[in-house]
Image (cartoon, rainbow, N blue to C red; front, side):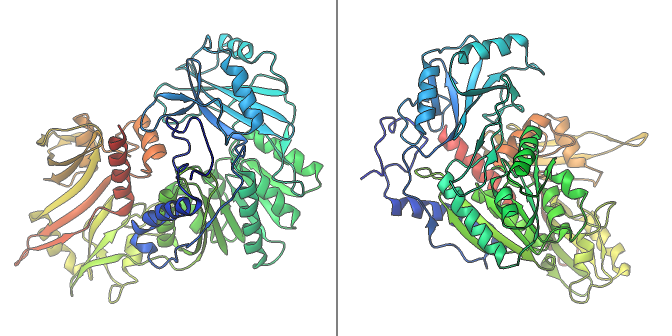
Amino acid sequence: MPTLECPHAALCAGCPLLDKSPREQAEDKLARQADALTLFPELGGLVRPTQVVSTEALLGHRRRVKLAVAGKAIGLFARGTHEVVDIPECPVMSPALRELTGALRLRLPAPLPLVALDLRATETGLLATAIVETSETSTTEATRLAVRQLFAGLPGLDLAVSRRPPGSPRMLGTTPEPLSAPRQLRDRLGPARPWFPVAHGAFVQAHFDQADKAHTAISARLEQLGRGLRILELFAGSGALALRLAGAGHQVTAVESFPSAVQALQSLASEQQLTLTTHAADADEFCRAQSPGSFDVILVDPPRRGLSPELRAELARLAPRLLGYLSCDPETLARDMSALQREGLHPVDLSAWDFIPLSDEVESLAWLEPTETALPRVLYSDEQLIAVEKPAQLSTTPQGEYSDSLLARVRRLPAAASAVPVHRLDRDTSGVCLFARLPEHVAWLAAALTAGNKRYLALVRGITRKKGNIKRPLREGNRLIAAETRYKRLEVVGTHSLLELSPQQGRKHQLRRHLADIGHPVLGDPRYGDSASLHYFRERHALDRVFLHCGSIELALKPALTLTSKLPPELELVCQRLRATKQLR
């Protein structure tokens, strides 16, 4: 029997597990979390949860909804399409939001390019943000007037407008611009919990009961460390957790990127006589300005795309006693935990939470503790050579602000204290990397490398020819130097190409520059790619680095020596998501 009845179930994709029992839903969510962890072998020692923290509160629990708009329809996309399914009787939406969308539906279609709505019901009123599709860099007065007219006469409403560029992968757009006088709305997770401010665009959990349970679990874990902890919360959203921890006597610093949300949070903290330090800042930039040991505990609750490589490095540098990671995407969580473990933060506990009942989404709460940075995986070693697998976001040798390096970690391997690199891979490139145990071994190993062959794997934008030869000189300084790259297409992944590349020389950024020259830049490349693709793949497909991997090196020795490295899990994840997207079409 279905968990509840819904008249829109046949078309709407919002509750894909509606027809399954609570036990089956929990099994599906645990399976998704387990599949994500299995993709990253470094996490093999982490104990998997066997239960999901679930809830029986289903009817009317969603107090915030992000809905697409098309014509007179207000709802969600049908699975695998951009066709909007109208959902006027959605049983999981709060009664106040059903009433609001019902009133708006009668006024549609709107005389403006309205593509989405971000609606929220609180104990003290309603918020509505109209998302308008436009290439304008600022909101026009005509757009403001049209939005005000659309919502005119609806009571108890705070109104805002947001611009979304055409083709954006996100439903929401730019920072919402208020269109009505602020009413200082507030909300709380329960009668005994602190009031937190409500602001347009600020993050808030959709299921308050589940959020409160999670905050209770976090509070209990922190009590094990003691009282008066110095706590940093990144992506603090509306500040519900920060206020609760401040009320428990901890020294809390809350960082959130929305200035209006931060201003309201600080004001409400003072009103409730809670000591709280707030910063309207980007999480990466804020952490860069802090010193190691500044915080006992760091808590992160990032958006679905997870943590950036830069922020992961900063979190490790700050060396908290404990890192708590609340995640809404098990795949990006697994990717981040694997990377953090290499950086010196080891995952020690993981739980699964059902924050969006009836959906196939699963929330995770992970705890990480400091440990030594990981040694590189050794692919081959003898008395002269050490071949290791270089991870991305780690320089081959120390560079500028990057004090750690693959070289430093190789020198921690047995009998490798004097190791030196035979060649270098870019910081953002992974794969086979060679080191000589002693400086006197470098020359002949480098000669064997030059006479041998290197093959890279790259995912590039668009569909290339099956094979090709790019023979174009590259400029280095004031001169042009010869450069040749051969490629073979291994697979069409989604609408893009997975290539095997063979550079005939080793020029700086040769592969990336050549592929960009022929109109097929490497995906994730911030220098030679395009910003739109970079943003899209970060948001939708968990790509947080250049998709370039040194898959094999053949040394011209007698006998020849071939060293191989499989596509790393974070890049395989990108391919999996692209293949799944293609199947849905």
